[in-house]
Length: 123
Image (cartoon, one colour):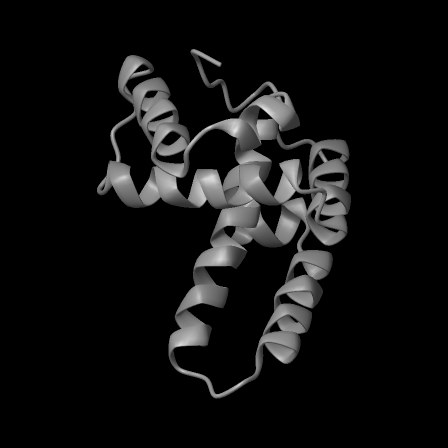
């Protein structure tokens, strides 16, 4: 894999064969080439990678959310951002919680399942 385009799903097998840092660099490269101005390109790319990894690993709530969000009118790239926003809140909550891994994962899955295009756009 030599390029990343958030509007096209990467081949899951090829994606997962890459080193995590390679994935992040591909995502950063895409955003630089697209001249997307971001407050923190590295953090942005990390959350893209988290979502792409979950898709490639076939995490069911994320797969359902991608299908739902794109059906509701978001581009694939926007859907990655929407799910990434849930992941960001989840990670913040993890740092401030005493939940075990199972409870934490259940909370994340439920938040992803509740996500819809309108709620994300309304932010």
